[in-house]
Image (tube, rainbow, N blue to C red):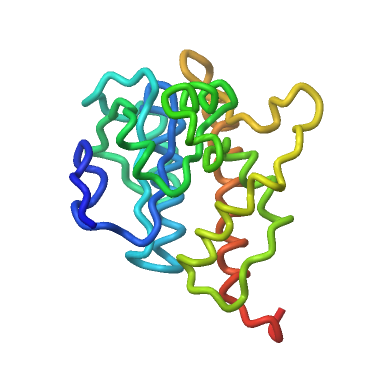
Length: 207
C-alpha cells in the first residue's frame, strides 16, 4: 500500500520501519535526534529505516538552530537544509514508533491521536526500557522492531524521582551548556538503541 509523502520526509513508497521524532519547535532537539538516529540505523541497516521529525508547535520551513548545526557538525553530521515541519495526525498514524523529547510532548501526541499511546515513548524512556526487552532471535530486523514496539508498553515503569530523567532538556533560550547537555542525553539514548539493534543481529552463540 502506498503512502503520500508528508512535507517531503516520508517516502512515497512504504519503508520497512518508520520512526517519527517529535519536538516542540522542531529546530533543536528533534532534528538532532532524527539525524543521529537515522545515521546510526543506516550504518547497521541501510535503507531499512526511515526517520523523520516534526514539532507540536513548529513554524514550518524554519531551519535548525545554529547551535544544533554546530553540534551535528562536530559529530560529522550535516543538518544544513533541514526545515521544520508541523506535526499532524497523518504523520502520527503512519509511524511505527514515535519518540518524543519529553513527557509533555507525549501527552500532546496522544491528545492528537489517543491510539498513539501504545507506540509513543520519550526518547530516554525508550532507551531505559530497551535493556529489559530481549530481541526476537529468529525474526528479521524489521520483525524484531515490530515485536519491540508491541512488547515495550508492557515494560513501562515509572521513572525515578520527579520523572525528569525521561526528558531531554530543552535548550531554547538557554546557555551553550544546556545545548551540550541536550546533546549528551540524546547521544546516550541513541547509543543504547543502537546497541539493542546490534545485539539482535548477533547470534546467541556469539553473545
